[in-house]
Amino acid sequence: MVYEFEGRTEKEAIDRATAELGIEKDTFDVEIVEAQRGGLFKKSFVKIKVHTDEPQTTKKSDFFARTCIEETAAQNQPLAQPKAQNDFERDLILFVENIIERMGYAGEVSVIFRENRKIGLKIDSADSSILIGKKGKNLDALQLLANLYAGKLGRDDIRVILDSENYRLRREESLVRLAYTVANRVKETRTSILLEPMNPFDRRLIHTTINDIADVETKSEGEGVYKQVRVFYKGTK
Image (cartoon, rainbow, N blue to C red; front, side, top):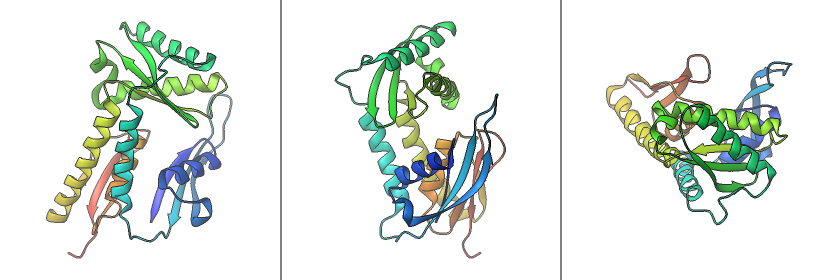
């Protein structure tokens, strides 16, 4: 099976592969698809393909989809210490709140989970629907800014996850259902279906959910961050 991962360095992309696939580094082959050197006005970027021959006794798509949803649900449980515990967390929360204020809205930001190299922030606001935006694009933009600011604080080793009104969990559940629905339709019609433009995480969830469904495959099409996923029939006509 083949999976795609991205990172600022090859090591970061490989680390994401091991974390998300739950396999050891020495059990898969890595192919560098794209590499961009960093410069004064741009960051380094590496895209890899992971080739693995794992046994298929367990459907990885079901496991991955279920794990994503269960982890997100756990992350959204009330935290014992939702307030900032150090200077980094305080600066990060203040940064997000200031951005929301400059957008013309009021919002309170708190910590919803702390993990190794990952922190989750939640926005509580009467204008959550606007801050989330259509298909979560506003929330994704805020999350990107939060991650860039974390890097300026010297913590580019930490990934910031921004959420509001449990949007991330609801989005993942919706995408898993969509993936199965579209895959079944493609198998019935023996044609292809092009999905709406999605961010890298949403696309990866679609790819992985459909990956082990017989006679159906996926590929990303387009340029930029928001690409489309095409689901197409690969069985016998």
